Amino acid sequence: MTTALHPDWLIPDWPVPAGVRAVFTSRAAGVSAPPYDSLNLGNHVGDAPEAVAANRALLARVIGTQAVFLKQVHGSAVLALDAATPDGLPADACVTAQPKIACTIMVADCLPVLLATQDGRAVAAAHAGWRGLAGVGDGSGQGILEATCASLQALAPPGLERGQILAWLGPCIGPTAFEVGPEVKAAFEAGQPQAGRFFVPAGAGKYLANLPALARLRLQTLGITQVYGNDGSLPWCTVSNPSRFFSHRRDAGIPGNGFGTTGRMAACIWRDR
Figure 1: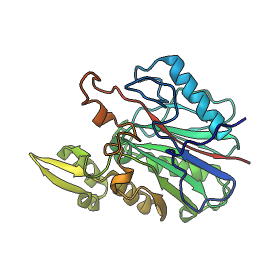
Figure 2: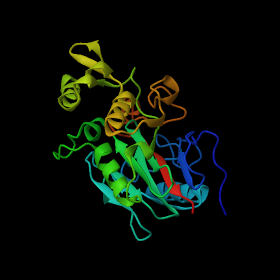
Figure 3: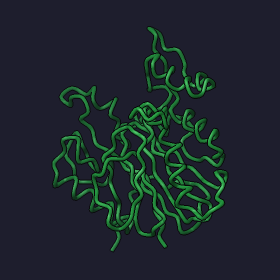
Figure 4: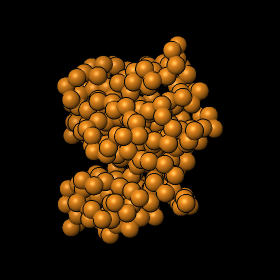
């Protein structure tokens, strides 16, 4: 038996085949106590383990399939999922061509990117914080979107062109809230000089970075032009919508919380047949 989808959760609006399903959770509908209230899906942030387990069980009931959770490390490793894949393996993206297995990414400011082939034969989810997006997270020099795209193509039927891949960008820290140092701007410009236009000076040597725009640029460079979802406007900003979204950067500043004391939302994508 499935549980009804909470109205605060997001269903991506993109032209994927009928057999591909996706969802992005909000902070609503769970059992966690403050400051993790209420649908915290992260088991690494200090929340009660039994609450996290109950929240993950609720997610599985709602989507009617198995959600596989990763140990995300801001790198570029991509994990291929099957029915035997356990939770907690280190990777920042996952792919599958098998039905009834949900590629799942947790976020609380970083950008979740969902991908699907036009024929619906393979799906993927990627955790795109700035380190993974720029390819500096694990020293590999390869960005998480480049690695995920390559893994998705490897699972798809031969001859799949990147223009036949669709992408959806979920909520993340927005361009009015994401203050970064010059090293972040330099990391993106090292690979793509045109990325500099997505950094606005904010004084004292700082910049406001547009994470979804940077992701769109990376995807376009890969040949993925069918990109939907987050356009950088305030409704998509995790920091600016405290009643709906967890935010690592915002919630760490609340008195009594401490750094990193916030929940995690999830972006899931799966084949239902």
